[in-house]
Amino acid sequence: MKNITVSSIKKKKNQEKITMITAYDALFAKLFDGEVDILLVGDSLAMSFGGEKDTLPIGMDEMIYHTKAVCRGAEKSLVVIDMPFGSYDTKEKALHNAIRAYKESGASAIKLEGGIEKAETIALLSENGIAVMGHIGLKPQFVRAEGGYKVKGKEEGEAQSLLRDAKALEESGVFALVLEGVKAEVAQEVARSVSVPVIGIGSGSQVDGQVLVWSDMLGFFEGFTPKFVRRYLEGASLIRQGVREYAKDVREGRFPSEAESY
Ligand code: KIV
Image (tube, rainbow, N blue to C red; front, side, top):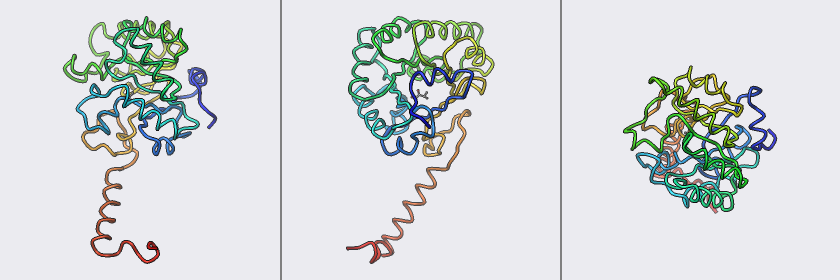
């Protein structure tokens, strides 16, 4: 795989499906690098690795720390950093924090949640040379305000407002959009209505690419498995098995052997 850039992602629209997974550290970024187009340092980090109930508690400093590590591990895949909750609630704050993200983390693009109401913010970031990935549909940063994670596109009017959001974000300059938790028929309509790639999560197959949280798809996170996740590995059992064998070897005097000693 060649080095992936923001413009090579844009060119994949209607040509080739885009692949994206999350990454939160250098070790795993190195393993994933070049296997997928985009590594997203998602604020899902707060839940999958921080043990939080939702994504809201994580801050800018933590996101930057983890993104720096991912950038050290990734040479080919494009690295995108999620803007955490509260870091872009005003245009000025968004610009300040996005510049920090660019300067301090080394990521090639930022991602933020929101539709038409964030269009001016995205336009300001774009004008200042920051590549923005939008995120509409189910927006995890709204979980407390909405009282849970709700699939979009089921209710009257939701399809129209998603189309309006996608169009506004396209006009404001996003290079791609994440579309989360949207009924498959509506997601297909959204993908068809804009010229930028629409990367789905829980939004069916008729979009321009897919994203999953790596610890979900590799079976490391056992808390729950959402309907839209396919598990490609039973990571948690493999890890547990390895750790148990190590502990047994230590307890029974089989580790270290002579060959493993100085
Ligand atoms: O934080 C995250 O991991 C995300 C993806 C689920 C798209 O935003």
